[in-house]
Amino acid sequence: MTRVLYPAIDLLAGRAVRLRQGERQSARVYSDDPPAQARAFVANGARYLHVVDLDAAFGEKRQTALIERIAQAVFPVPIQVGGGIRDLRAAEETLGAGAARIIFGTAAVERPALAGEAIARFGGERVACGIDVKEGKAAVRGWTDARGPAPARLATTLAGEGVEWLVVTAVAKDGTLEGFDLDLLRQVSEAAPQAKVIASGGAGDLSHLRALATAGIGGLAGAIAGTALYEGRFGVGEGQQALSC
Image (cartoon, rainbow, N blue to C red; front, top):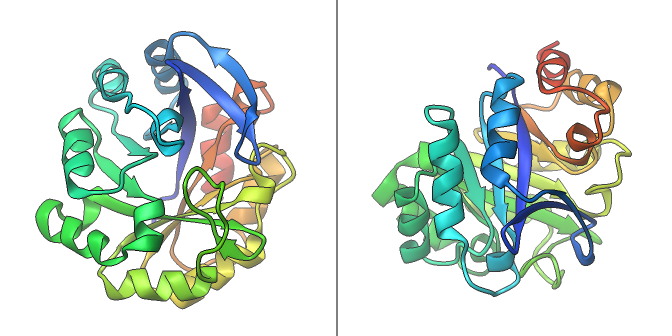
C-alpha cells in the first residue's frame, strides 16, 4: 500500500488555522487565503489534502463555498473534508462541492449506521470515519465531548458498517509536534484489520513519520501533518518520502 502524506488545512472563519489539542482559543492563523495555501502544498508535492471545516465542527455555518474554491484550486489533486458532516445531506453537499472523500466524526460515534448508508449511496472510497480519541474515549462535537466508546470498540462497529477508511486522531497529541500515538493506532488497526488507517495528531519532524512508517501498524495508509508543515519543520516532499520508507 502506498502511504500518503495529507497536508492539513483547517478552516476557521474563512482562514487556515491550526489549533492545539482542538482548543478553539488556541487558534493560530497561518493563511488568510486557504485556496492559495492549498495550491502551495500541491506545488510542493502534495498528492491529497485534508480539509476540516472547524466552523461546522463547532456547530456554526458550513463553509461550503470556500471548500469548493479549494477543490477547484488544486484539481485534479483530491481533497478529503471533515467537520460537522452529520447527515447524508451534508455529505452530499460536501461531495458536490468537490470533495473526493468525506469524513464523518460526531455522526460516526452517535449513529454508526449512517456511515453504512453513505457507503451504499456514494461508495466506500468516498466515505471515511474519524476516530478522535480524548482521555481514552471517542470525542465528538469539535472534540468538546469525550463520552463516546473506546476507540477499538468504535473501530469494530464501523468496520461492521463496511467502513474502509479510518482517520485516527490522538487529541492530546494534536498540534503538539510530539509524535504520533502509536499504541492507539495499533489498537484501532487490530480492531478493524480490513480498514485503511490515516494517522493524525503529533507529526513534528521526519523522525515521527519514519517511526510511524516502521511501527508495523496494519492498514496504515497515510498521515496528516499540519503545524510542522506550516512552521517549516519539513517539506511535503520530505514528509512523503519519510512516510514511504
